[in-house]
Image (cartoon, rainbow, N blue to C red):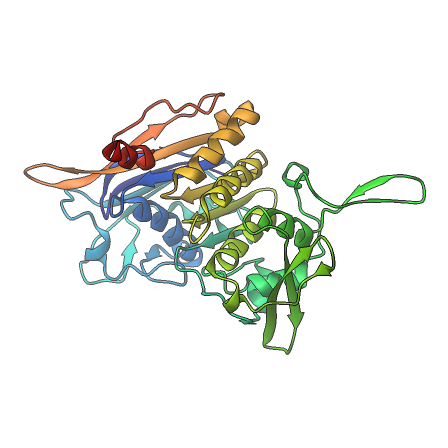
Length: 377
């Protein structure tokens, strides 16, 4: 697990140490530095091999920033620096030299990367990243055995989610506390009750909080493609016909990637999810927040970037229902500071108590619904 990340002179982040926990929520208006924080982790992840050679990649499979001049804090008076503290490898301090038109940053001085543990969460196949630009609803999805089978990856846009479910849908989820309360229960000949813990069943149950009684149908078509469809359980005549995702709407398809990522998390995993609320009804967002809180109770680290009050409030409800999660959760609120000489991101650490109450409420943090309503009354 990543215990702390110190960032100095990277994009809008001037100098900030982030004390990370199991559940880390990034909040703030657009363009305030949340993505810059995530990009730090992605740069380290995509540079695992080259870090050992003495440099970090600005552009790669996970993030493309451009040139060194696009990455360095505009008003920097020193070098780019990342300080990484992990459970396995201890403290790793990276100081980088600067060449404005280079597409890499070279490590200055002693290279700490030789100390990286081979099973470090950031660099293992238990890493999952879903960016905000997820794929649109469609019937045919590409296969990737290297991503799905070897790396257990859904793809950064969720492009391999359907293939992942086709291959792993019958696997049992890792964490019993994430079992949906309405899960199917079967009875053996000895009257033993067995809860259906299969990934596909749990995905369907949690998706039903967003679109009632939905069921995901995958079909292995060829060596290159797998098909996705949705059907709906009816109380009187079983199930509906299978509908194409294009005819169902964005919300279910977008939620499918997020729910699958959360429920397929493994012990020691690291999940980064941007805008989990995209295209989802407010009630569904709140239920998704509760699921995020449930996953974070386990040996998993989550970094969630969101603009949704409902996601945050769902997490707060989850903490109130499980107060011990308060010590495993933290919010980071990003806002821009503008002075006569510079502008940079100010990041406020916000704690959550056992009742789901926040330690601070910076301006524009939450409750925009109430702000607008007050103008109507």
